[in-house]
Length: 62
Image 1 (spheres, helix red, strand yellow):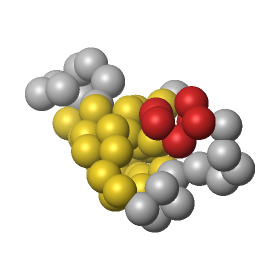
Image 2 (tube, rainbow, N blue to C red):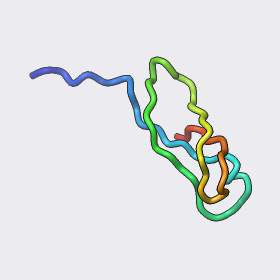
Image 3 (cartoon, rainbow, N blue to C red):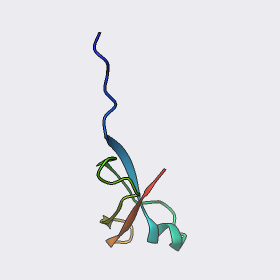
Image 4 (spheres, rainbow, N blue to C red):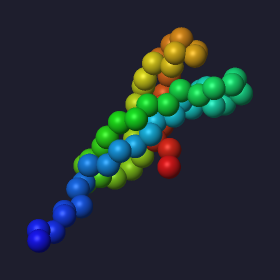
Protein backbone atom coordinates (compact mmCIF):
# COMPACT_ATOMS: atom_id res chain seq x y z
CA UNK A 1 0.00 0.00 0.00
CA UNK A 2 1.11 3.52 -0.76
CA UNK A 3 1.43 6.00 2.10
CA UNK A 4 -1.00 8.88 2.12
CA UNK A 5 1.04 12.09 2.14
CA UNK A 6 -0.05 14.85 4.47
CA UNK A 7 -0.52 17.88 2.24
CA UNK A 8 0.55 21.43 2.93
CA UNK A 9 -2.77 22.87 1.76
CA UNK A 10 -5.38 23.19 4.52
CA UNK A 11 -8.89 24.58 4.72
CA UNK A 12 -9.32 27.68 6.92
CA UNK A 13 -12.29 29.79 8.06
CA UNK A 14 -12.18 33.58 7.78
CA UNK A 15 -14.42 35.62 10.11
CA UNK A 16 -15.25 39.33 9.98
CA UNK A 17 -13.58 41.29 12.78
CA UNK A 18 -15.70 44.47 12.51
CA UNK A 19 -19.01 42.59 12.67
CA UNK A 20 -17.87 40.63 15.71
CA UNK A 21 -16.94 43.86 17.55
CA UNK A 22 -20.21 45.64 16.65
CA UNK A 23 -22.38 43.18 18.61
CA UNK A 24 -24.94 42.79 15.79
CA UNK A 25 -26.57 39.36 15.43
CA UNK A 26 -25.23 37.00 12.78
CA UNK A 27 -21.73 36.68 11.40
CA UNK A 28 -19.88 36.81 8.09
CA UNK A 29 -17.60 33.82 7.42
CA UNK A 30 -15.75 32.55 4.36
CA UNK A 31 -14.06 29.18 3.82
CA UNK A 32 -10.84 29.14 1.80
CA UNK A 33 -7.57 27.22 1.55
CA UNK A 34 -4.00 28.21 2.30
CA UNK A 35 -0.58 26.64 1.92
CA UNK A 36 0.94 26.04 5.36
CA UNK A 37 4.47 26.12 3.99
CA UNK A 38 4.14 29.55 2.31
CA UNK A 39 1.91 31.23 4.92
CA UNK A 40 2.54 29.77 8.39
CA UNK A 41 0.92 32.74 10.18
CA UNK A 42 -2.79 33.57 10.31
CA UNK A 43 -4.44 34.75 7.11
CA UNK A 44 -6.03 38.22 6.91
CA UNK A 45 -8.01 39.27 3.82
CA UNK A 46 -10.47 41.99 2.86
CA UNK A 47 -13.80 40.38 1.92
CA UNK A 48 -17.36 41.59 1.39
CA UNK A 49 -19.65 41.43 4.42
CA UNK A 50 -23.28 41.15 3.20
CA UNK A 51 -24.72 42.07 6.62
CA UNK A 52 -22.77 45.34 6.89
CA UNK A 53 -22.95 45.79 3.09
CA UNK A 54 -19.29 46.77 2.71
CA UNK A 55 -15.79 45.33 2.45
CA UNK A 56 -14.24 44.51 5.84
CA UNK A 57 -11.18 42.71 7.22
CA UNK A 58 -11.66 38.97 7.74
CA UNK A 59 -9.17 37.04 9.90
CA UNK A 60 -8.48 33.33 10.14
CA UNK A 61 -10.08 31.64 13.16
CA UNK A 62 -9.29 28.32 14.77
